[in-house]
Image 1 (cartoon, rainbow, N blue to C red):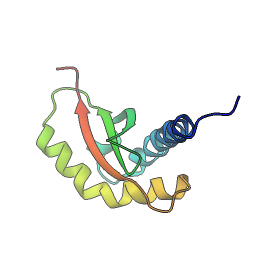
Image 2 (cartoon, one colour):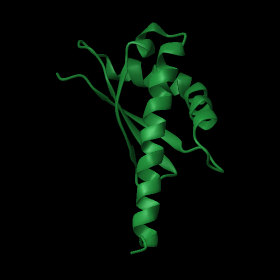
Image 3 (cartoon, rainbow, N blue to C red):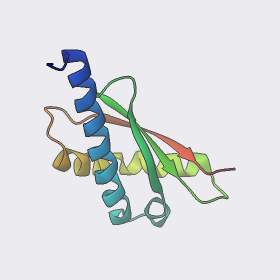
Length: 103
């Protein structure tokens, strides 16, 4: 039975999210910023589709969310570059970040 186009597209998106999570997990330790080096990739999900990805990162408490998000904003170009080198797409997805600290 052939896979429906919508299902096949969804599977491609999930596979890309998995590849993005792996690429970002490898890229964060390469950042010059020690705070970013300490973050852990918890998940990557389409937000709302594959053109934008929601990256959930884990941080050890205490956490200054504004500071971490500012650091991520400054490193966004580097992280997208690392992602572009890993996935095969015409356009590299935009990244949006969410921090989870367990607090």
